[in-house]
Length: 348
Image (tube, rainbow, N blue to C red; front, side, top):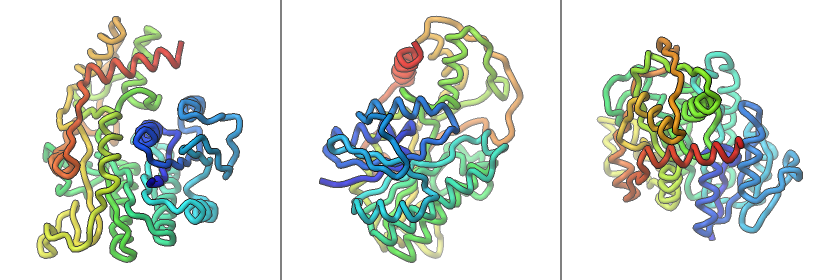
């Protein structure tokens, strides 16, 4: 039986990944600092859904329910993080813990250095001290920045980030490669494209729009609605991660040409994949799907483009499809319905 550490397990994707891995007979250890970037009650509800008594949660105390364990711990706490790695002997690490959000990074840039750079460095140091078979870490589609070369391909230039969040994710990719080189840590970075679904974060568009429509309140849509996103259902995301776990990159990749290097491949045990739906949806069509699921119209207020935002995201995901033999299965309408059902249940 393989043991997996999921950082950010009280988060959106981490919660879904833990449930899937437990169903597939993995032993799971999750950690999260349960910060107040958004409603802590939602994070605690996710942990309750995973079987934990949240009243028993204390900092640096491991709770266990069958094959599932949880510890409240901050990535910046290197001493206790090393103790956790030493005690647990992880086979795989999936690093999903991060300070998220493009717009939040405009106001609080230092939090991105603490969580996304210092925190990730500590994960790398622990994987060096206590070797794992595979480190999978969350990057982001935001690394493509100023690029308008659509669809985004892993080998496109990512040197022009638009906000600190994107810059921190680009830094993660470079840091992971350096540790793959120096310490032979097999690492896979995943550039997520607009993940959505049940238990989603309150700062995400789907949650914001749904909340406003239910309350019969106005909500803002930027760039006057002329935007599109490669919306990817969370169930398809975690299925992809599950399939990736045993498929660690190898050293001396013959597809890597050092005279013509590309960002996604290396002669070291390192690789980068886009992880998306490969089917961008106009934002106004996304809103229509929410309205249909709720059975009522929304009150849209159009606004100009926000700093740090991009007009469109569109993932070329052929490399990942071929590598794991899986394509996203969930239709947008079904995914939105699933979110709305859970939203109404949690907010009734």
